[in-house]
Length: 509
Image (cartoon, rainbow, N blue to C red; front, top):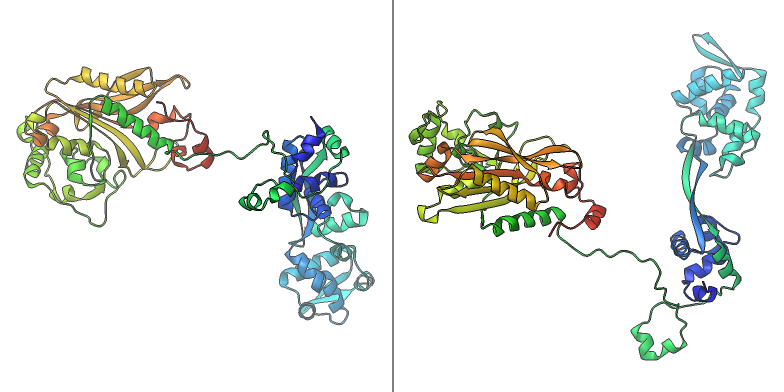
């Protein structure tokens, strides 16, 4: 590579830093040698590294620095030294403590250290009495190795300590908050063969401009200005255009699948009464799913309004079976429980409201919904308390279970699943009922993605006034798309990780 061309492309920061690398290598050393800010030096080093003029590596270094007590003891003196000086005139421990201005903890440290060094004798005479030994008297008038160490210029590199400093460091390190050892990572730069070649070619620290401004054009200054050569190979920051969240992309795609199959979209409120969410779907009022462990109830307003005419039919169906030919659940239906407001637990509530408003001339009809539902569940790798359910119903006098299987298979094939199976299951509002599973080749296992079935007469007859087959399904959207995005923890779908949002692949088209 031509050294002259490289020099012409160098930024003013690079022109300052490159010559400094003859004698300096760390970020701090280069900043001191050039008079530049560390941020400016770091940018220059990164650019030079991209141009392969230097190699950058990280070195981990240890530094000894003063802690809170160390800062204090530099001003006041070490506790043991103050103790010895006070003990020259006083003997009672409490008097020594007061004269030396020591805390109880510091006194205990002093007693241990000074006894260990044979500097004091301790005896009891009512209270504790301290007597200096000849060693203690000598110590009080002499600067200790620990005191000398604390007068050093911090921070200190441990491997540069002499034997006396090593001893003092070892002793002080055992004590509370006097010194601390910190590890730091330092960037170290080294000239490459190409860098040395460029440096040998001669770099002038001259003003070069990398931007042509309107004022230069107006005044003609551009003719007298030296411009930095444009480097088309330089690494630049990535530009990430705005786009919809990948979960929303998937939801839009699923809506398009159902629209293409001739379905119409259902919409409705997030807050529903228990009547529409559960009672209208023939879920008994003593069902475990209805209590606070599974359902999120609204405190204010606590109750909603009930449709009077519909209420009578639903109540009769629950208590005796009404006009459905069923025996019902055989209990006393509570209107108070039916009026309770809740966050909808499934979008099947929209299916109930939709078929209740259908007229005979509207049939056959197909509807879908891709919307949020709420469950009082513990957040985990496989469960959310707020998620999106994919709902669908087909209302047709000629509909049958075979049709239901076809719709489900067609939908999941559009999501990229080749193998789908239907297994018998139980739901209070469908008969027959089924669970939908897809095969995941990477895991060599079947994964359950939702429930389906044909609405029971106890659902359709009170709502529609007549018994017509209604195919129905409710599928978890999040579980359905995890495989496509190679996500193993369902919480990762909504973690708002910028790196993930920028790099994740687009939803299938």
